[in-house]
Image 1 (tube, rainbow over the protein chains, first blue to last red):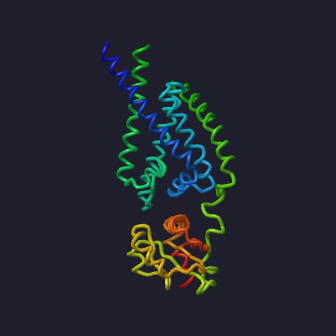
Image 2 (image 1 turned 90 degrees about the vertical axis):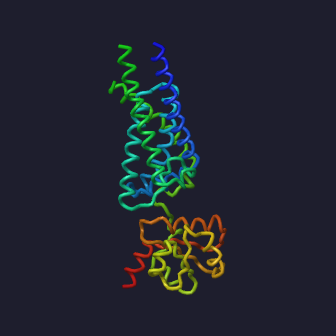
Image 3 (image 1 turned 30 degrees about the vertical axis):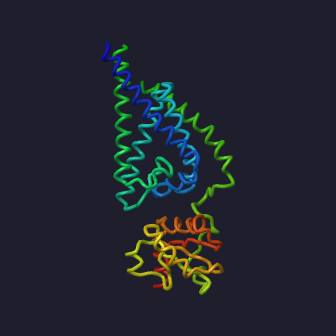
Length: 146
Length: 143
């Protein structure tokens, strides 16, 4: 029982870290949407006119999903969206690298401008792994409850 | 569980839309909605060439690409060695000349970034443009 409680606390901490990271990343991009639009455009996947519109929408989505994780409201929805966002982002980064594009991921606004590609990838895989782990934790929690 | 996750995800998408629309309305006059650079920030090869002596060419590509070949009289100024190269550039600079910055091709962003830094950091009052299509386009027109 005590072990179960400890695990629950540990997963709450992961929720708070992942949620907090997405809120932080979202706020940085909300402050400078034009820079984020440029970061999206650097991937050369979407036309500018779509990328610039996404630059206004995605940061708010990150903030709301981060809040969902922290407050545990709309939790599954938040996890689903963040899983998709991270999956798409990782795929886009790898494709861009394979095409020889020298990109700044834009994940943390201007703060991440000087991150190396290896550092981007490590950080993003770590976040993605944490999100996947949260899915399993959620599944186990539901299993124990039923 | 999946249906619940989808319902919640849809609700989060709708929630995120509301402030995003508000922010887009707030920024509507400051954002180039149709292209990354406005027409006033770029120039095509023919027009830039017609400026003749009134244009100052800036090569924003890495050193090795500049060394291999470049537009005649172009001055090297890239982000890798910005602090070293800026004084050399300023030695040739004239306030009356238009500045045309180029990088390797239409897909590169180096020229745009150098143009932005000349405007915002070096505070140059010149008409600063990015060459459409970059070096690749210049070569095509000079074959």
